[in-house]
Length: 292
Image (cartoon, rainbow, N blue to C red):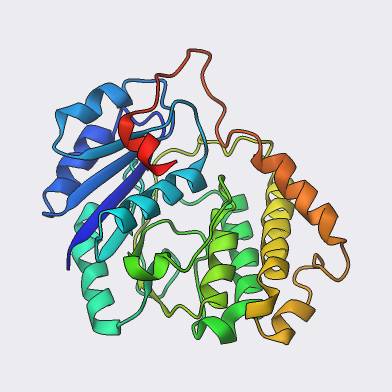
């Protein structure tokens, strides 16, 4: 299987060199999407035999993943694996994802930090993140579980393997951290097959922020729900009636006018996902122009 490993990065100078060395040791092509870093990250990348996309400004986690998808499609890879750059995801687990993809025949192998075989290391996950993950994962299962033909245990893990040809069926637009909400709805709407794979629960830095006003857990949860409900409405022609009709978590298209949902999503996703440093960022590389 011709495989691309894609790593979104934002101000990861402290870890990126070691992560890239460990990832390249797995023997696959590597793409880094530098999301407007203002530290030394963009100066470190040319030291490695990798491809990289450089955003002139911070565009958000979802935008970085969309660039990775388009790059993998354009270069005709068979599989794309996405992973973080701060050691939350272990490069040594990459062969496990590819083995799970081959054995299961699934379109998506989604990492889970909360399966029975998962294990925790280092710092515990922040309580609010665990709580929101638990709530959203349950709501995704309640609404989409029968269509996805699986029961998720971790709706937000970014360590995933994607069959590249099925990515052509998706039309993803969310630039920020609510990207998984749109992804799961479109995966269900396009009947993609999903399996989960256990990964380690690793948190090395509890000071990271979400930006865009989403550090407030209640606002973050409300935003995730708004994106989820909006996408269900937009994909309603491809989803069973019971998925469109039901209301999850007290927020749904039946009790909130769709224009209100659309406006709330536009308002938050028009802001950067991270708070950029005062220093200006460099221009986009030619590779990023290709993917815009």
